[in-house]
Image (cartoon, rainbow, N blue to C red):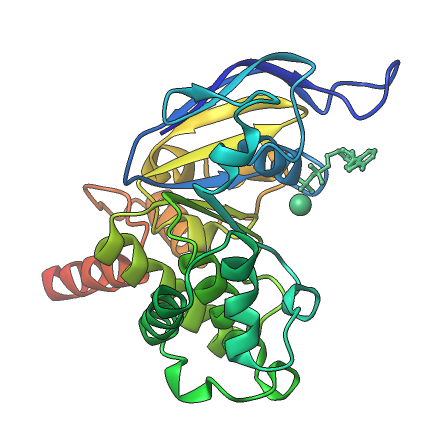
Length: 275
Ligand SMILES: Nc1ncnc2c1ncn2[C@@H]1O[C@H](COP(=O)(O)OP(=O)(O)O)[C@@H](O)[C@H]1O
Ligand SMILES: [Mg+2]
């Protein structure tokens, strides 16, 4: 669904490459996290996916179509973006207006517009807020409306660029659960940009960027195995990883590294019952 073929990018001539000879593939319906410390090029990669930026070298393909001047508007329709700051994403005075805006722009007929708005607000659990002012919503609710606006455009891919990072724990949970539901329900391809390994644990694959290169492409388990070494690429191991690593140091035997909290708790019970 997404392919980077030897992609390099720099913002200005004679400055270092922000992305340097990147190859990556994301299949249809996958949930992929892009990880990396601040400045590692994650948002730049996101903008290359929807054609806001164009590579200096190499090609970006969406659903086998290379992004070019001719294809960019067509391709962009398939790629929805949800950004970090829920405050900056509103254009309408009500939730309804806000979701309607993008649809008006692409000339969706009125009847279909109403259906699409209701359907997408329903899917994110915000239908009851249709006539509310966006400013009065919680952070998590605002992001869910932003997701509904994207969903109404019927994208094949949704890119979440640190979309949970400004939310409180309740808001974060709301968004992750909404993402999981949409991923299943619509078989959407999800790109989740984050520096939080707890969030990355939910994905099928992870891509870790470091100094403009792909440092690791694999499963969350492949990544979590690096333990404390993750700090070298600016990532913080999760509590689950830290507990697992210290158990290992103390020679407690756990057959497979847990990555989710529940897996760890199950393993701890097994250990406890053995002793
Ligand atoms: N518009 C821009 N002009 C010049 N440099 C930029 C611009 N946007 C980002 N950069 C630089 O590119 C690098 C990668 O930025 P970015 O893709 O935003 O990283 P991330 O999202 O991982 O924090 C950083 O060094 C950043 O300073
Ligand atoms: Mg960023």
